[in-house]
Picture 1 (tube, rainbow, N blue to C red):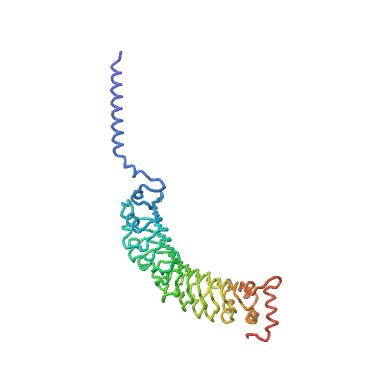
Picture 2 (cartoon, one colour):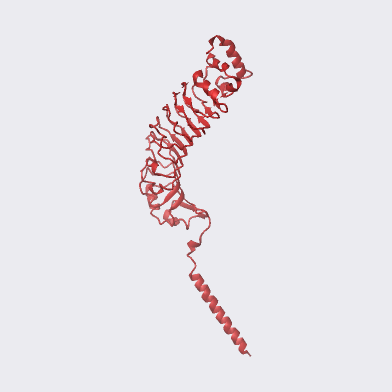
Length: 373
């Protein structure tokens, strides 16, 4: 026998169940779409474009909001199709294109998508059209492009470099026979391995005076024009290695940067250093002239360096030096100054118990009548 209170309880329960069901249905109806709930670190899915739309490229993201796009082994048609996809967001941190066959990076190919960093590697890319990265003018900071040696020289890939208002680093290697002057007030790091380059353009760095690291390697450069680096007042490191420099002429190594710490001229064909080739070096700078073709160390070229580099040194290791009376001028330096000359042991092929001090004694005895003073 049910009491009236039992009936009330049943009614209340029914009402509660109905209310809960109604609330749950309302809550379910207002849930965001499943892709909008996705906020894990990973690949594909929101906030990336749909995987199928950008295949064979892949999109990755992290919790900080960075988006990276990578394309490997694709063609020009593939690239065009990828950037016709719907991109929920168009500000990408990095774009990587590798091992593809894309001879020309065409103007407008990226649509409205922008990149902070671009890495182009082994794509047989002979040409980048002037406006190909136009939408990244205001955001691009790092541009890296590596191509393999080829029979045909490639076109300089940054004809519009002046338009990238935040560009900090360029790293370019490939079969380039020419480069254009670097017109960028924001550039700080420059690495150029231009395999076919035989000469620099006039005033190549006057429009990029903020460069701190400048590396020119694996080129066919044979000479450096006077005062080429004089306007680089922030320069800390200069490397011109694995090239074909034959001679350092007057003012070819003239500097004005008080921060310059390292000048690397190793692995060239330098056989002569003229008087006043070097000027403006800070007292703590290191000059590397190892692995060149120097037969002698001329007093008028090296003596002033050894006396001025009070905390730095010069490395002349592994040069075919004659090591005869042409070195007698070393006797007229003090011990501290002579210690700033490194590498004579390897260049003079000194072995066993015969050391640098023995060489000086030998020079003093053999060359006393040939004093340079």
